[in-house]
Image (cartoon, rainbow, N blue to C red):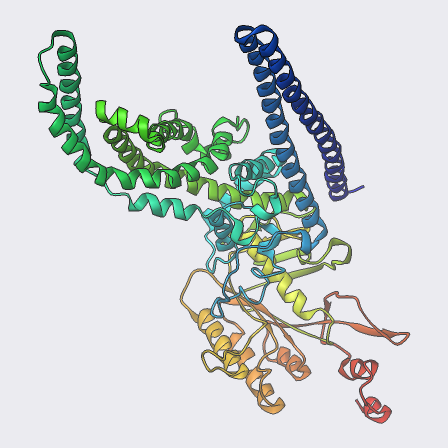
Length: 627
């Protein structure tokens, strides 16, 4: 039994155990509901009987006992509900892992919708983003920015070797911490009461937590320099008010307290216009911080033993003076104090005696200023950790995947891989291939029949490079590669909005690729092309294709071109860096079969007429034989 099967079976066992635990919790919940009803009914009956028979003194004691018992059952039921919610989320997290292993797309949460960027060098062609995409397969982030961070890593047009190395080290450390990664998701979800019952909902699309809204709100908060002097003046006046009032009560000196209370009331009334907006927005801040409290607490209290790089990443959560729990408790106390405004009678009494609102407005303004400095760093660390955890989940769920080895510029190995496969194809049906580019300027010219696997092979190379440069493992037995800029022309589309025909869109795409190849840069290009000039006639397509391949050959890059134009294979005679490869097909018992393996040399057969005949199109026997 391989490690992948072992991990899948372990997840299935965990789901079953959680089912049993949830059933037990539901039984406990039902039992507590019955007990609560019994305590209420019995308490009501006994209390009424005691009041009727023995009077109010004994009735008060008996009633208090039943009230305490009822409160206890309510408290226990709340604990059971919380445990049920957390177990349900935990089970859903495990089920999502299984869905990712099995590529069950209906059970994998959608990602944030992204408008297509037709100018991006490879996003559209490699299924990095979209409905059934690499980003969707990987993305376990609960926050929008964590998901975007992962997407940006996958779509980097010029990889950064230092950043890639740091990310790979962190992902390696995180891979074995499956419980920590799952708790990272759990704590992020339970902080949001709106989504705490559905893990799949919380990590999908528009439901991801929009942390940028909280930062935008904080950045809009301006310093209020008048709050402090106003608070000092009001405090002095309040002391005077209380002192003179007490003297009047004790010695009857007269209402001299009005002398200080009138200016106190005027200044306090003027301050209301400045403090009211702070208190109105306090609920938004409280809600945002409540969502973060659970996740930040996890990152503060985790031990990080034996994980030095992870500990270094989470250093902002470990600073004793600036750790989130200290700041969040401070904010909570301020918000609780400001919340007295919802009790008008108590609010009026306190503000008559003390500068209550001014004090908490001043504290709120101070706390907002501190959060403007601290919160961006906390959130950025969490977002990065979510993106890293997404790639670590992928590594854990695909134990056969290997981390790439990045070769230096002076290495003799440019790009070499063994048994490379496509991560979006199920393991049971995935066919892997070996590939090696010997030197810059090399081109693989790949011929083969329709449906033989040429386009999938191109995407396999590209999507694994996206994974590698993001810092994750690749679906290969081995991958040694330099850092390349990726550029593809596989799925060119016309643009009605810009008035581009399919052919012109293809011409623009290929011209942009050639420009990228010829750019003076230290990072070579890795290009992937599926057919050249499909949108024109055969004669001009062949002429244009020959010239374009000649322009690519010997350039500062390597790449692969899939084509149906068998005439292009002759270019190998004049271009030393061009190698011919092909994918085969066969017909057995009236059915097309493919092995999806890359073979050296030009393709010896074609299958377009075979497919037409098998589909029932009117291809005569003579025409078929003539081909």
